[in-house]
Length: 194
Image (tube, rainbow, N blue to C red; front, side, top):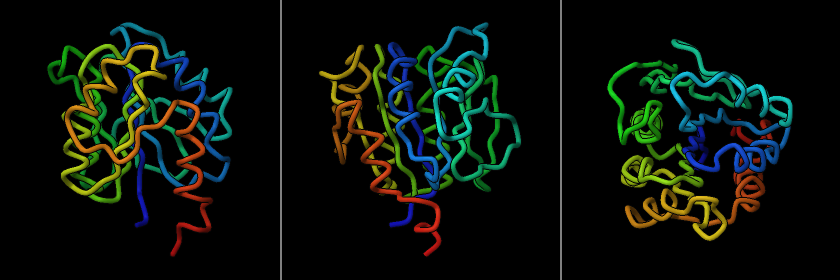
């Protein structure tokens, strides 16, 4: 199966988790990566700046109507839902909070699943609520790949545990195992053209 995108949801403990996962992706990682991290509504844009400084990939704040590009990491801006449209462009929304959150992991996962179906990889990382569980279940129903950080390796285990409880997860991995697994699964750009 050739995958087309990776979506990641994370909440409490997220910065430290993302500082392990994102820089661990190889420089020729062939897919776009979309991240929802729960942030305060008036948070600054520190997260993409911090990750961009650490990562071999370009990390940027997602913009409305932007087209997805391979090897770019898109971070949802504070106080906006991040959605994937059917034509694989991004959109930002100020619709009401979902699971008390905007951006919401479920909103990203569900819209990305509708856009990419079985060609989507969904990952739930550390967090203290249940956001992402329903979205990961949707990804699985559409035959995408579901990966969850092992609750015992998570700073806040509630969110990964909720995802495990919600669906038949394909892989439960420690934080340090996820990037090497993705690198092996996806391979460099030239391997994805077939």
